[in-house]
Length: 100
View 1 (tube, rainbow, N blue to C red):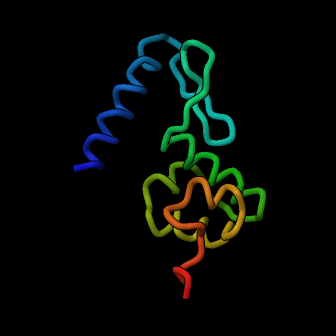
View 2 (cartoon, rainbow, N blue to C red):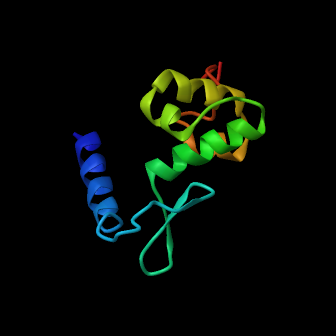
């Protein structure tokens, strides 16, 4: 149920960006630019940032791969375990020990 609301919210959020001729999503460090010049955290930009940080660590990965494959996102999160990016944008901090 929560996932439906999240997807609907993201769709509404992105709809404003698709109205212009040069509509494109602008991301910076996991945040998306808004029309009024502010920045908000969105799943799209979070995944783009994870991919960017993964590439800086030597992984060949795109934002689309992170968004479209949970296993690929998991790989990136394991690589980035313990980093601020993993703590902020991974389902866990990237480690699988869950406190064990």
